[in-house]
Image (cartoon, rainbow, N blue to C red; front, side, top):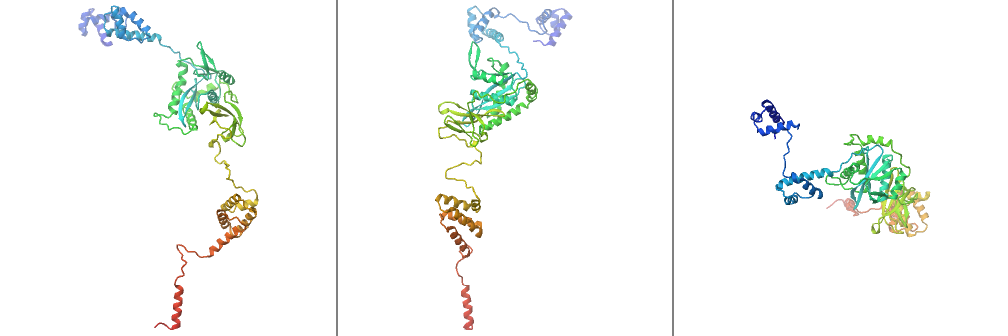
Length: 509
């Protein structure tokens, strides 16, 4: 194929000579080439445009297009070639393949869907969808991802399931994190929103309609296979899963608890909402102000249509009663209102407890079904310094001045009181007073040691403490053998006797 410069030289040579052959000799090409470019110029065609020649398949293109359209573009070229041969086609199979490929491209262009770009208005649309979350403690979690279509502000909330109550809880929390409610909430055709379709029209879930009415919004579902309205939130789901779910690509460690996943979701929201979006070229945090200006406020109290039965947590015990069983809740909720419901059946039955907060309704506890008389207790729901009352283990606390003075002697006094009370010792208060008097005479440390010895050996009779104390005092004045001292008398006394004998005898022999 000639370049544009070569074609211009051919045309210039022809204009100079007026002869195809003379121009061909000047530029060094065939006179047929000169004739073709001159003819194309005379017809007003662009310079260098290839001239289409007649093909052997032209007379059979109607049949080829018919076969391609009837098969939906799936028929093979060799099958088309066999059909054409029966109709008198004499071309090669290569020519047939080219014609079939051209017919398939035309059929694809004719049936291709054309999507109109979706231009979102501020404060109008909130979209949400779900993604598979990480596995924590053997249970699979769910990521609830919502975004405002105009500002691209994203919310990511970790859920334990996709039940109706969990979805309502996530939506309420989403509204409170944003600080306002949009006009429409757009989502997929989940059973929590759409119960069925009749003649292509979705039938809404009545609980969802009641929930939307309470918050002053309208819940709509996306058109099937409509990337213009659904693609944005689906892309948000992909990004959130790629960052939050531990994979080989991000090398994220497994989550130790559900609380760790919630913290990771919060960090992810902060990161993406403060980063410039590639489409708007602005941060979502900078654009959300335009949406808040046209949204309506969030009700002070959350809608509790699907959260369960209301229960009041006692002021001194973080436990709630539900269907003949007791279940623990975090101790910070003592005196607050919570909602309890049952999810699952048979062995998978669970009791779920949720509570309202400043950021909306949140799940606070999930227990197995408790049997009457056997409460379900989670140790994390109680403070670390909470006193756990066990039968037989009593906390020793002084109730009056005499008890306070006795217990101040030391650890031995505590042990003497505990062991003596368990043995049913009589006249304990008088014996405690005697021990206090002895501590004033001999010191607290010595009496504390004696009281510990008496408790260890069961010496609780009258005078036992004084007797043990006298024994300890007498032992301090006596000598005892040890590593550095011996009880042997030695020979120094014999040496003295020997010197005296020599003096009286006048010397030796």
